[in-house]
Image 1 (tube, rainbow, N blue to C red):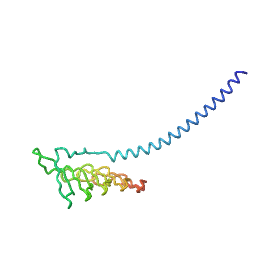
Image 2: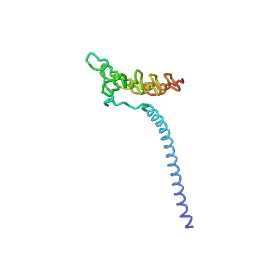
Image 3: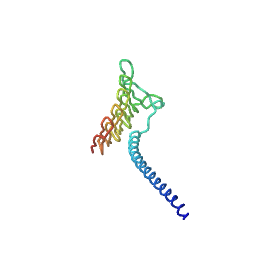
Image 4: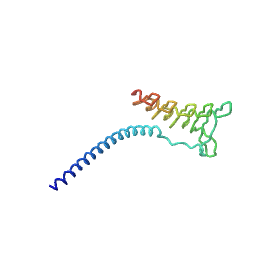
Length: 188
């Protein structure tokens, strides 16, 4: 009889602990499922951010002695309107090979900026709003859009994004409203 008295309280306590453990386990699994859902959304956003920030061509350091800076156009206040960077020859004189080009607004903010190879856009190019916020980010090969292309609202949210191949839109393009909600997609 003493065994039954000892077993019953231990049995009840064991059942209570077991139920409590299952309850905590279920709550933990629910939390993990929600976290996993959040993690998946974050992973998609991180992947998009990675793709948008990926530079397919190496950045050019214009402070490097391999490039010469020439202001092609100026505003009335003598601030630069268009600046190009040329490769230099062995004597240090500018060649005809343009490596980079930057256009400025009258308020001295960048308007468009990117690498060139001769007369053609090459690599990553940016366009900016007058306040300096990025408006467009896109890749070029031989002067044609080629690669990820993203246009932003002034608030920084993506307006639309997709991929160009040899100057033509390809695949799925996503269009968003100003709050960042996907409005519609189009396939090319």
